Length: 426
Image (cartoon, rainbow, N blue to C red; front, side, top):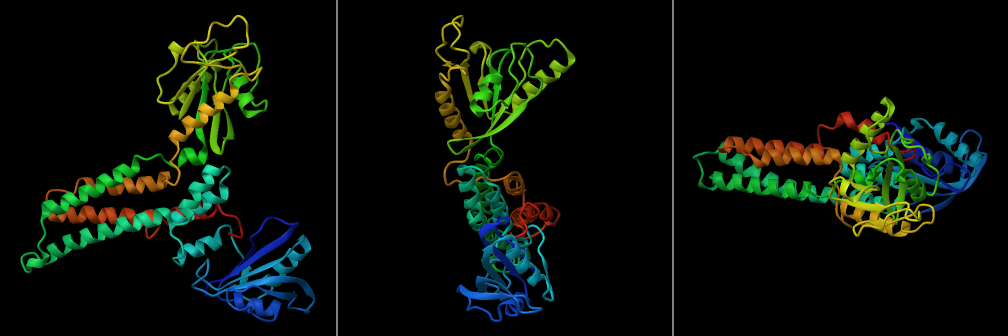
């Protein structure tokens, strides 16, 4: 028999209200033991919670009951909404722990049971994990779209097309020469598989989830003493980087996560680019060059003609408040970290460029794992082979990739890592 689990699902006490959930075959029995009765299904009832051992009152709480399989976990679920003081929460948890067959939940165990019982698929679980970790509005919207089944619905529509193609291929193989209705145009079947591969390719060309989740990587680069660290500090509104008049002060990349207008940004300060004077500075310069290669956007604080080639590049004429600075080049933004001149415009340009890297509003963004499975399916379908047997095998391989994508098979090795990202009550 599956254990019945329980946990505090709301924030750490003290709080105005605490939510404690239990799920499993003994959830209703435990409710009867501490509340003396069950509430009607899906209706909140005010009940007195008592310690089962001596009947001492613990608290007045709202109790909700959800009958499996039509519950969040697919099991019988009881939710207790009590006062959020530490003593109250501890007493309710202790009362549940004293019931036979109940034990505290492990991190993510409620969601894992929902996955195991078919209430959500793997893509929805990943979206829910991202939703719990979301720190910006863009991250929240994208994660919510995934958690609510956006990718699941699209994958299911594609799967149905794959199944239909496979059925035609398998029927033609099994009954070759026996029935006219099982005959298939092998070239047409292969063409339909390749058309599906093209659709997957277009999907894979969309912006990915990593810049949205980790932040658009904005690398501030240029020669020594160009004002890079001062600019990073001004954008971060904090002294994150050391600023001195000594060339080569910055020796390593400094990453600063920011949210600009709801857009997640990972701002990176780098070492000045020049011929290094010592081994440590040379390492810093090499790392700066590596950061530029990985950048989603480069903010260049140097000679405009020496700027690196990059699809998203903002040229900045820094230290514009200095009287000895030359005129501002036409393709550069005049900026002073000391006076704030141009800082607002730079942030506007960074946000505008970052939005080009991020998924469009309402568009699903695949993470690395999901993209890898779709790429495997695309490759199988793009080259279905010269005959019916190879086409059928290509379709089977594509279906297997789809099964791994939504968690139907072949994902046991990554489930612990995924559900470990959740809190105890989730």
